[in-house]
Length: 390
Image 1 (cartoon, rainbow, N blue to C red):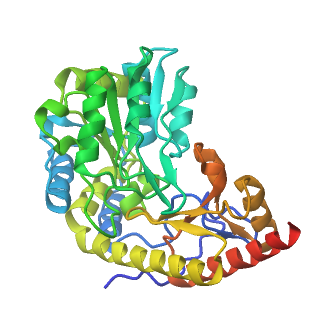
Image 2 (image 1 turned 90 degrees about the horizontal axis):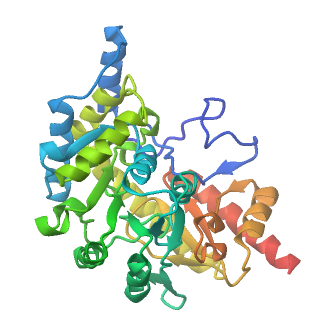
């Protein structure tokens, strides 16, 4: 059994998440408050103890570890020559946007979605074109509007789509049939499909996620898949990611971009840390998923019983909960700011994810249960105070 109950003091440790006031409780950025698996720490200590920190690059043991992990955990093995090492998913997305599209092109997304996608598009002189996910405010579930998606993909300026699989912030695990339909539309309209699958290991309920590269061969000749141990194992600072591209021509184009865009040498501990994670971290992740599921159930039950004014969008993946506050306000920014000022609880304002995000808050529940309970009590207090102002 691994420890998912101890609170690790993180203030004054250069943590972005915990760079907050003494009375504040951060439950915003996607960063877990669980200590890294001891098997990873052991591999990293061995590397540090070696004592020479020159230039390095990954070899077959790294790529074998990635492939074996996906074969074991997700029953899909990427071919060795499909894989490229990168120092992160976000820089890879930005590089791919530059290499695969032209200035002025449209890049299609499905809002509300991870806000940094917009930076990778806009900062490179491309345009965001969103096929917003359709929201059922009775069932509190999102669906793809395929007619709208096809219309956006058919625009002559649309040359890339960025998919989030599983989807952040709504926790949706796209089914194999949905992925096939999305990909068929992209192929029909000659659109390169980039799939960010950084949360793929964090499916805590229901059917597992489907790696995009596991689809039939004829459907994966236009895809770029980005995976990483960063969210799974809480090792974002290692800066390690793997890019999986089955089509050789597309792979060469993106690979040249990764090299010429100077994404950087591997972090000193990225290679041994990732190998240890993917070869020895299975049980740790399985127990992590159980803890996330417990916390998700805790939040859901608490809100149903104690904060009936909000509703939970019932996702089955990620440790990020999407909370519908539309009965309270149509301005999530105002509510998030108020709750932080009044209670110290720091959650994410859903507006940054665009779409209908202005009606939502995002809460990170990858923390010991004691911290989640503290956060829920603060959330209840903040909402009660907010209601009294109306």
